[in-house]
Length: 286
Image (cartoon, rainbow, N blue to C red; front, side, top):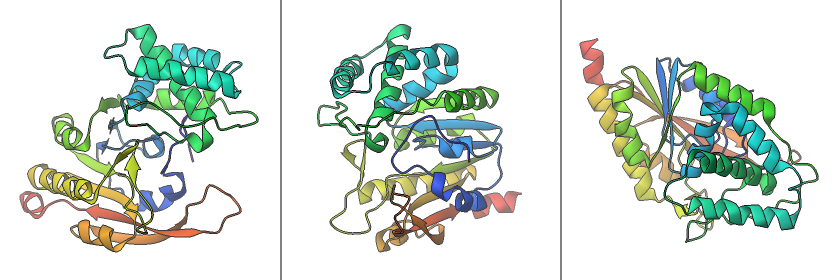
């Protein structure tokens, strides 16, 4: 398993064996919810279109792949002397100040990416959370020695450049149709926020609610490009009655996975991988 340079809620490291069984071969993989990039790092497509609604995440990936050595150096500098609460909250404030600016010059964008990785590695489990003002507000994680992922950064940048990966910022409603002109033989893999298994649970994306209607809109977008272009689609989500109803157009494959971050925990949760094959009209043409 090749790990991402960042920690991310809902990362796919635990389910990659199951996911690889259902991802079809194609020239290009499109990810509207790229998150940590674990699927990108552990698949072998010739090209990638990697999208996310989190601009701060996309900026980090763009800086890392466009200026790998500068980014690694900047990240190492920001990490230096930063493992205490006082420095953490100072750097979090500086990160938020840069986030609020409409346009960043190249040096500021690089610094912003370095702060992003620093915060990701110094908050508990890499939790990314924003308040209503759009400010990052996850607390200090109190790790004894936060890991600096230099090797993971180099591997990520190398693969992104070898495959000419494209990084786009946008909501899935824009990124899915917008990616169609970039690939003629593509698979779309979607890993949206999971539908909660209980009424007391919640599901969000970067502090904003991702509703059942958002899931329905995602299905509609995937069905549309499947019918128009023949692109296959694969989704991951929790195994709930709502999931099975909303994603009923997909062939659903269920399995159990340990969800707790604790290695001692045996708590298992049901998940599904849904597969939307090539539409009938494209089969007939073929």
